[in-house]
Amino acid sequence: MTQMWCNGQWLPAENYPGAAQDRGAFLGLGLFETMLGLDGKLIFPDRHLARLHKSAGRLGWSVEIPDLPEIAATLLRKNQLTSGRARLRLIVTAGSGSHNDLTAGLDRLVWLSAFPAGETPAALSVCLSPWPRNECSPLAGLKTACYAENIMALDHARRQGFDETIFLNTAGHLCETATANLFLVVDGVLITPGLDSGCLPGIGREVLLELAAANGIPVKEYPLTARSLDAADEIFISSSTRGPVPVTRCGDREIPAGPVTEFLRTLWERDIRI
Image (tube, helix red, strand yellow):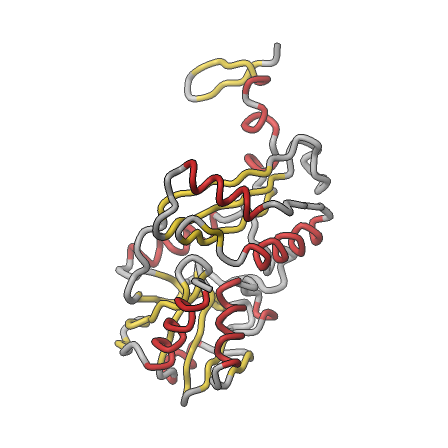
C-alpha cells in the first residue's frame, strides 16, 4: 500500500487520489468558472460553457457538461440556496499524469460547488498593482487554477487600504483587476481594454458591451494607459457574479459614481432576471 504524509499523519494514498496525484492540486493545471446563481437558477450558463470549452481547447482538453443548468439547479436546491444570490464554482482539473504533459488523465475531476454570494458592494477603491500582467503568456485570457498571482496582488492592494488592484500589462497598458474586468467612461463613451491586453474575456464584460451597444451607449475597445484613469469621468469594474460596480476612489483620486455606470447597473439587473 502506497503511503502519503498529510498534516502530521501517515495515510493510504489510495484513499486520497486527488491530493496525491491530481495535477490540478500540485501544478495548478486546471480551469474554473465562477458563476452567479439567482433564486435557484444558474445565470448565463451557455456563455460560461462556451468560454470553458474554448479554454479547454487551448489545453487540448474536451469538456462536455450539457446538463449544467439542471445540475446547478439541483445543487442550489440541495444547499438551500434557492432564494437570492449564490456563487457557483465549476472546476476542471487535469487529473493524474506526467508532470510535463498537458494531456488530461482519465481520473480528472469535474466538480461544481455553491455558496452564498453575499451582497454586491455599492462602490470600490482601486490602486495600480506593482506587478504587470503578461499579455504574451500562453495562459493569457484563460481562467486557470494558477491564481496565486491574482491573490497576492489583491492582498497587496488591501494592505494599502484599497479593495482592488489594477494590472498594467508589459506594454504599460491597462489590462484588468485581480478579479474583474475594467471599464472607463469618457465623454459618455464606454471604453475597455481589448482582449489583446491580456485580460480575461469576462462574461460580465461580454454582456455589458452588448447591453451598452443595444441601448445607445458608444463602445470602444483600445489600449489605455494609467493616465487614462485620470481622464475618466467614471470608472467601474465588472464580473459575472457582481455585474458593474462603480469605482469611487482610484489611488488618491475621488470619483463620483456616474450616470452611465448606474444605467448599466439597471440594465444588468434586468437582464439577469429575464
